[in-house]
Image (cartoon, rainbow, N blue to C red; front, side, top):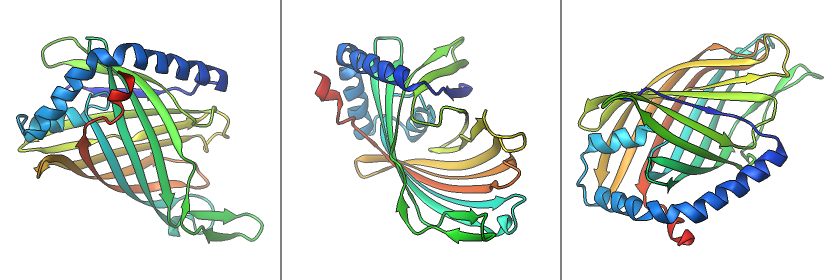
Length: 266
């Protein structure tokens, strides 16, 4: 498998607007070139010409060309110096369409990933009362990021993944997400993609979240659709001293789809 790593860099608002304009221009001028290949690949998946292992490898590649609809249920436990921090838990649901647009003939993609998150029981500490409050179910801010990415192979089975992106993360925060995947056969994989965050404006001891994770996934055909089901556990070896995630458990399921926006750029 190709070792996988991708970094997300935050841009100032003016740069984000410019980046968005450049992205739209690239989409309009180049997506038609890769449209036939993308549609052919989707049709090949539907006809089950690719094995479960082949599809699993493509889905494990975050810069890959398969459009899918991510559904993610997350359960967190917490720790920290605040009184009662280790007693807190939270649950959330994420819906994120992953829509890649092929660019040129060298395996490049522009990937559009809007995200809708619903929090069910997020704990909040009231410093005035010294008590914890649990927020009711609420829709979080809808986020949107765009990544320009590709895979560069240095050999038949080795290479590296690269990507640059624009999003609406706080400007003081850098995020790095690393990926790994081990194919076991028959659509089974061991894989994980923890997200490291560093807040440059936070005080020392409050700025770094560093998780280590592992998970198991199964890719299979259900009817005419390819699905991947994944269960992942992450442990945070570093988190903000006052309050931060201790353990994170996620269940992710996603169908592979044809990108419905490709024809918009004909």
